[in-house]
Length: 305
Length: 313
Image (cartoon, rainbow over all chains, first blue to last red; front, side):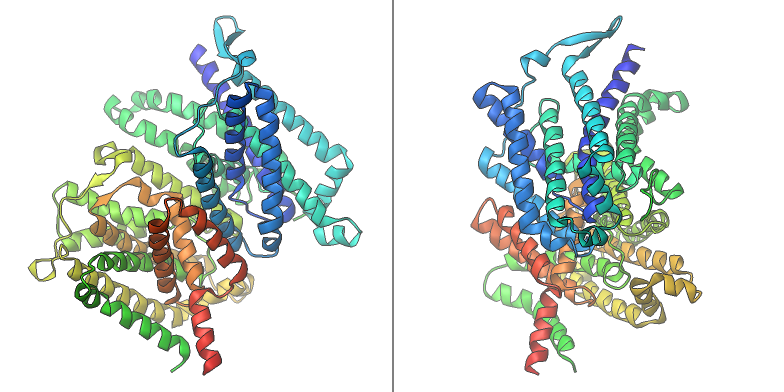
C-alpha cells in the first residue's frame, strides 16, 4: 500500500513536470502553429544555469531566478533570430531548423560547462521527508514540485481565461490574421508567448535538476514525452496538456513499478523479468498510439480549428 | 537530356570511381566513408519516396534502419550467416513493422503524423534497449559479414562498396519506375490535394500505406548494409536524432527528386566528417549550418546544382 501511494505520487510529480513542458509547447503550437523541438533545450538551459548559479551563490532561489531570466532571454533571442522566419513555413522546415538548434545548444552546453554531468542539490529548506499519511513518508522536494506544478497550472488557467493577455492569446489561436487586422501587435504577442513558454520549460528544468542528472541532451527525452502529452491531450489545449500530463506521468511510474509483478501472475517470472522493463518503457507510447487510433485529434482537441 | 539527368549521371559515375581513385591515392578511408554515404543514401531515398512524393513527414525512419540492422545482428548471433537470409529477413521484418506502424499512423495527418511516427520509433528504440540477450544498451557485435559465397566476399571493402553501389542503383531505378507509374502519380496527387483524390474515388489510405511499407522495406535493406558496414548493432542506430539526420539528408538534397537524397547524404556525412576533424565541438557548427540551409534554401543542393545548369543552358 505504501509503495502504491509512493508510486502514484511519483507519477503525479513527473506528470506536473511534463505539464510545465507541454504547456509551453502546446501554447506555441496552438498560437503560432510552430513545432519547436528546441523547447527541450530551454529546459536544459534552465537546469544548467540553476545548478551552476546555485553552486556559485549557495542560494536556490537565486539560481531559480537566474535560470528563468537566462531561459527567457535565450528564448526571445531564438524567437527573433530563427522562428520569425519559420512561422509561415511548413512543419517539416520547423522540425529541421529546431533540430539544428538542438545540436547547437547541446554542444554549447558542453563547451561552457564541460561534458561531465553537473550535480544539482536539493535546497536545505526542501530536503528530508514528511509523513503525508500515517506511516507513509515522502520527500518534501517532490511534494514541492507537485505544489508548484499545480499552482502554475492554476495561474496559467487564470491568465488565459481571465486576463486581457489571455484573451488575445485565445484570439490568436483561433484566427491570427483577424487579430492582426484588429490592430493587435501579433508579433509582440508571439514573442510574449514564446517567453512564457521558455520560462515554463526552464522552471521544469530547474526542478528536474536534483532528480535527474544535469547533462547535455537531457532535454530530449523529456521533450519527446512532452510531445506525447500534447498529442494525447489534443494539440493547442492547455486543459488537455494538464490531464494528459498527469495521465502519462502516472501510467509511466505505475507501469515501471507494477508491470513486472503483474506479468509474473500470467507468465513465468523469467519471462516477466525479460519483458517487464521493456513493456514499461514502451507503455506510454502504446498509450499514445491507442489514443490516436481511437481519437486521431487527441482527447481534447481545441474547438474552432 | 535535361540538366537534372546529367547531374545525376555525373554523380553516379563519380561514385563508381571512388574505390580505384582512393586506392591509387593510398587513402582507403574514403572507400569506407563513401560506402557509409551510400548506405545512408539508400535510407534517404526510401524516405524521399514517401516524403518527397507522398508528403508524409515520417519522423521515425531510423526504426526501419534499426530493424534491418538487428535482423542481421540477431541472425548472426544464432549462427545464421547466409546473406540472402539476412537481407530477406531485414527487408520483410522492416516491411512488417512499417505495415503495423503505417496502419495506425496514417489515420492521422500533419503534426500528429510526425509525432506518432516519432513515438513508434521510440517504442522500437526501447525494445532494442531491452533486448538484454542481444546486448541491450551496449549493442551486439557481429562476428562475420553476410555470406554471399566466395564470389561476393563482403569482407573486402571494395567488394562491399560495389555491392552497396549496385543496391543503390537498383533502388534508384526501382524508385524512378515507381514514381512514374500510375501508383506514383496517385501518390503525388495525394500530396498536393488528398481531399480531391478521395472525391475522385481513390482509396488514398491504401496507396499511402503501400508507399509507407515500400519505404520501410528499402530502409530495412539499408539497415542490413549498415550492420555489415560496422559489424555492430546497438539501439543508438535507432535513436530519434538518427531519424532527424535522415530527414535532414533528404532536405539538404532537395525534395521531389530521387537522386537529391544521394547528394544530401553525401553533403551531410562529408560535412560531419570534415567538421569533426576540425573541432571536437563540431555539432555547434553543424547545427547553425542546418538552420541556415532550412531558412534560406528551398530547393536543396541538387536543386541549386540543377538550377545553375539550367541557367547556363
